[in-house]
Amino acid sequence: MPNPSTPPTRIVITGASSGIGEALALAYAEPGVALFLSGRDAARLEAVAERCRGAGATVRADTVDVTDRARMAGWIGDIGGAGGLDLVVANAGISGGSGGIGGEDEEQVRDIFAVNLAGVLNTVLPVLPVMQRQGGGQIAIMSSLAGFRGLPSAPAYAASKAAVLAYGDALRVEQADRGIGVSVICPGFVVSRITDANDFPMPFLMEAGKAAQIIKRGLAKGRRRIAFPWPMRLAVWLLAALPVALTDPVLARSPRKG
Ligand SMILES: NC(=O)c1ccc[n+]([C@@H]2O[C@H](COP(=O)([O-])OP(=O)(O)OC[C@H]3O[C@@H](n4cnc5c(N)ncnc54)[C@H](OP(=O)(O)O)[C@@H]3O)[C@@H](O)[C@H]2O)c1
Image (cartoon, rainbow, N blue to C red; front, top):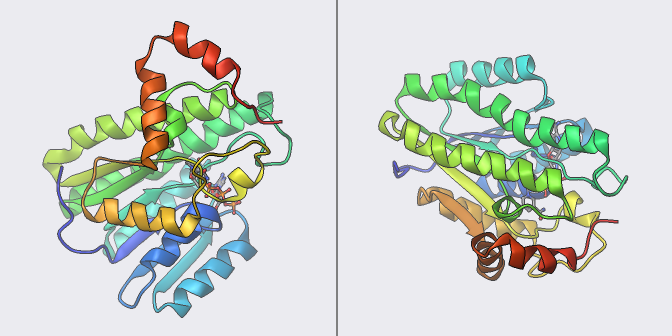
């Protein structure tokens, strides 16, 4: 996979109005960096943009819903056409319960796939022609350790994350000879509005700022997969490797969203 030799200076982050996306925007914010941030909540997004400007970055913040295919194509095309794209982080995502409803009802199942899967495609697909034209770039897709094995606490969420994990792994190999690096990010539990909605114990829960530093370091090294923390990574690896006849009963006893 191509190793990004120089730090990115034109960076797109979707879902930058809170949580991991906000922490990533702040981690990259410095003089000489242009950040292009999106989210739906204008007030929260602008507050993040202001903090990034305070750190010396140039910031354009736009309220763009990742499920709006046409607007996403226009937004990415506009930024790409105005000066290119070094790094695009397809981060925006939701889980059941983060809207305060709890569990995954039918609407949530459909919304989760619309945001976490179609939203990632709406971000990545318009980026590809831009990066192909400029002869390279780096794409980071936000999956999750929940994408390694279907989890009864969040079936649609886990499935959406498995889909983008497989998509990113395939895209990386497909795009490598065009100089485009693709990293898939698989965090465990990170403090955010998503985990704020969980009322069960979350092992190795990590602050968003620390997660952002791990992700930034991994992207600078051009890592194919950035999966952390390692004890949780080992746990999901085992869950995925063992026969389902063994793991189903274990997962049946695991805590679920309320
Ligand atoms: N926290 C964890 O433990 C964890 C673990 C593994 C993976 N992840 C993934 O990390 C990503 C970030 O989530 P987070 O944990 O930081 O949660 P968060 O604090 O809820 O942040 C989610 C971000 O996505 C944005 N977003 C949601 N729906 C959107 C839409 N339709 N269009 C545009 N933006 C949208 C939200 O912005 P608005 O509210 O302004 O729309 C917000 O900025 C997600 O993909 C999540 O699945 C999180």
